[in-house]
Image (tube, rainbow, N blue to C red; front, side, top):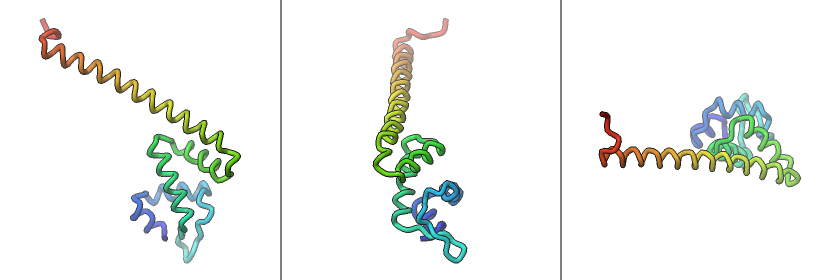
Length: 119
């Protein structure tokens, strides 16, 4: 599959694919007739990269995670630590949003009850 085909089929911007290629993460990518060719393993790696972005990892963390993953099982603890840290951040964001909703609901209630009216 060419870079353009991958970009179109999986909605991954070409500039993102260029970035990942520059990291050397898609080691099985081959240049053929001046165009990159992706195999199934490359697509699996790109899928993992997109999943990491979806859960909130920044580019630098994605690269680090992928490099660890490519090293194999001896990096499981480090990858689990990265995921646990990201999970903690997500939980903090959820708790912040819950507190914001509680405050919003209080203000809505106060308005309905006439408690928070300007004098």
